[in-house]
Length: 136
Image 1 (cartoon, one colour):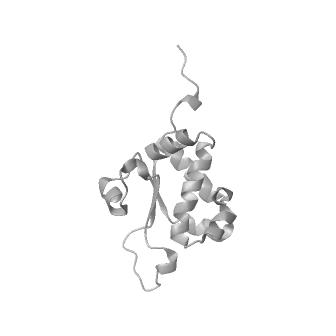
Image 2 (image 1 turned 180 degrees about the vertical axis):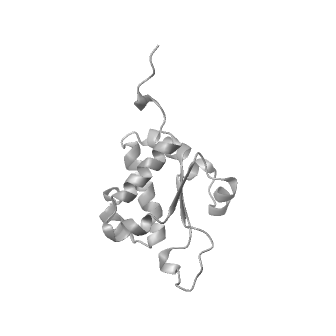
Image 3 (image 1 turned 45 degrees about the horizontal axis):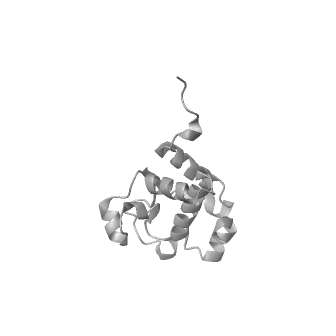
């Protein structure tokens, strides 16, 4: 018996992380370096506390989350107590990917990462659309 083709396997946590790093590496130069200082965390699901904090119905409602202080609210006098983090949640991402059926996993992860980066950088919808055409 042979192994099924790799495409028949659900994308792993490691693949989701790789795709997220690829998105960051293709950002416009103005944002690329700053985005590399945001920590990426990939988990199967958001914690119960995260779900409750944002008021979601359940963990399947949350594909990504920015946890930090947006650059538009940071002060040079603030001492960072922890790094800014973009969380990506694999199982809800996979569910959305399967439900859509019309985008690649790479496109979906890219869209989610850009959306979370928008929270960090304080981007407007117009700003997001220049980086992520899917936003239009």
